[in-house]
Amino acid sequence: MRLIPVIAMIVFACYLVSCSKDKFQTTPLIEVKDYNSKTVPRNGTLVIRLNYFDKEGDLGQGTMYVFRKRLNKIPPTPALDRGDELTYTIPKYTDRDKGELRLTLNEVDFLSESVTQNDTMVFRVAVTDRGGHTSDTLTTDQIVVLLP
Image 1 (cartoon, rainbow, N blue to C red):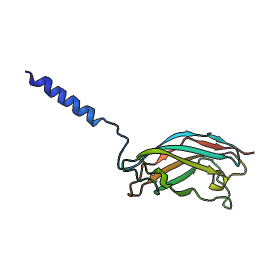
Image 2: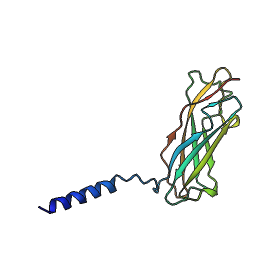
Image 3: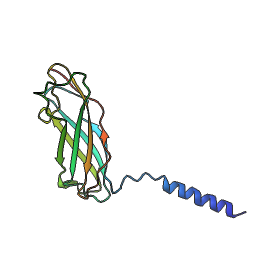
Image 4: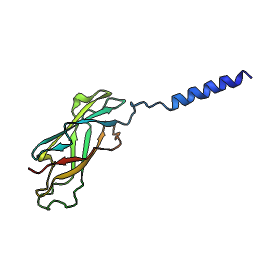
């Protein structure tokens, strides 16, 4: 009869270990830390700070992919449409297992294209480390770029 409490303790210990939420994995993990603002004036700048976690610490000189998804009902005129993808090389200083990435977007980077309405959009962001491991894609909150 003493065997039952021992087995119960072993099962409980295995449960605790299996439910561990270790953020340090081979595949990088990114999450939004904060925004400078979710409402950006025309010709303004959007800064999104991201936390990253990467077990090998080889995110530096990897790649950040940014995809814009416009939520406006009326699309921009074809002459103003600059596409919806950006690719950045991550600076070498990020060779740590955790830290912060800063994504800065402005008018030049396609933050806004409409000349008749506020632009509403979300951004999807993913990173790939030097080992070729790609994070899950995160989606930001809605960002609104205001007309003047």
